[in-house]
Image 1 (cartoon, rainbow, N blue to C red):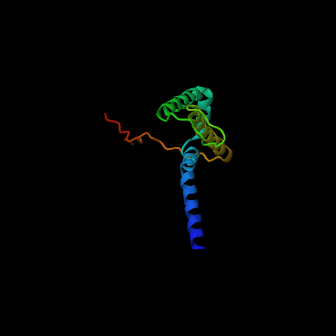
Image 2 (image 1 turned 90 degrees about the vertical axis):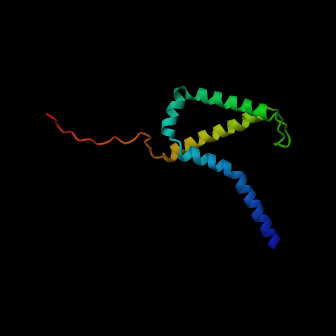
Image 3 (image 1 turned 60 degrees about the vertical axis):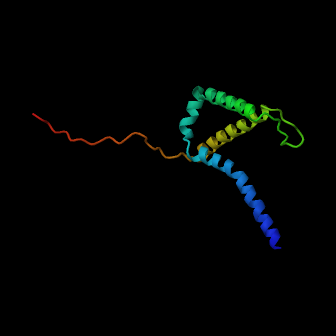
Length: 126
């Protein structure tokens, strides 16, 4: 009985560790990005550099890790295509997080990066 509990705990821990990067990715795009400002920027043409960056990153990844992917079990995905598919999935997940943020109005607070203005006295020197 005890080994079954330990085995279940190990399986649960390995599942949680495998899902942790995906959860962190979603938390970032849900709570750190203001999609109310990002959507108009993407609509005005900001999607083009994002797609170019995605394609370039997948090409670099394909050069670094040049092997086909047999992770689907039945189908072997050629080099280059599976990297593009993984990065496209991440981009699509970020867009879905933006939709969820807009749907539930989870806009993060505005944080000013400008230093505060110093107050100065208006004294007339004659």
